[in-house]
Length: 460
Image (tube, rainbow, N blue to C red; front, top):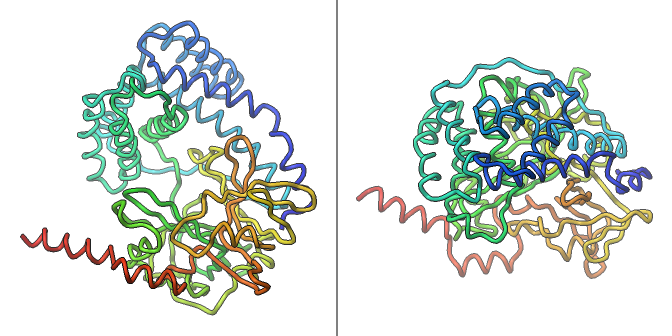
């Protein structure tokens, strides 16, 4: 549970955070208009970025890159250095914020250990870098359909190599956003920060070397804390946060695991759970609040379990609130992989109780914390009304828009003088609310209908 240091956490941001974000904003503005013909202001922004990192191990390379790009010499090595500098600034902001959060809640965190790994096929990586270089030269304002389409060959080649699919999906997502926005020159406002993030991550991933480290097989008991659902028009991901008991005297670890599926925009609400049929054991554990015994499950250094239903068995009932009360304070948190060191990726499980909520503001001992009601998914029973009536919550601490906020995953509430417990994953095996069940029956099984139609098309 967050203690009296919550007030310190919610105070002013750590020193230097605002200045670092201003430097990133200057770089993103230069990227918006392109590096082909940098004006005085854009050149000054690159110089400021280089100056801020002059004393770092990247200092010499970034300084040279800023000078070369400003002079019109734009090489892959220069863009990689600038992308590394941008990522380093966000990494410093991330580390400062996460360190303050860890201090406030008394959380211990493992250190990141650099790992060796196999390089990707150079020809494919070069094709990827070539498209990203053209984006940087042209700038977001100059993007048109021809420039977006020139990425197709590189993305198709990457998709054919399993180890490269993460980069391929990232590039495909960026290309899709740009294609939907064409011609970008006519847009009033650009998501410059978001596109800058995607460009930076893709460019760094396209360099030779290992970023995420190798997975280690682990066995033990997984106790589920809560579920976060990320839903988009064409995809949905269920991310489960939990505590892994390894046994043998080893400390328990905070872990995550995710499963995902493609979808269409007509599949929404509770229907999205039907897309997770390949993971019945995990879905059953969410719905029935069961522990899971896992054997030989791959665990990445950043704390992500690579889920395999056939390497798990359902265990005994395990109340997530009891798990949070007893074990959350002592579980060791995983280190953050290098490219994940970004403030928007902070999502730390916490347990709070004894608070009051007024609108979107939680008050705990006079400390006020914004509650991210807009992040509640429509596929579960957790509603803004239940959150407002709650007195205990398992949630994720996030940092967005320059402030800390709480994203609820489960709550204890009192409704009409009766206790109510609601978890986002309660409907993982289907809704239990009679009104929702009736509404779904009336609307029909959208997933089954679409699958049947797809089957007919494939048979023709």
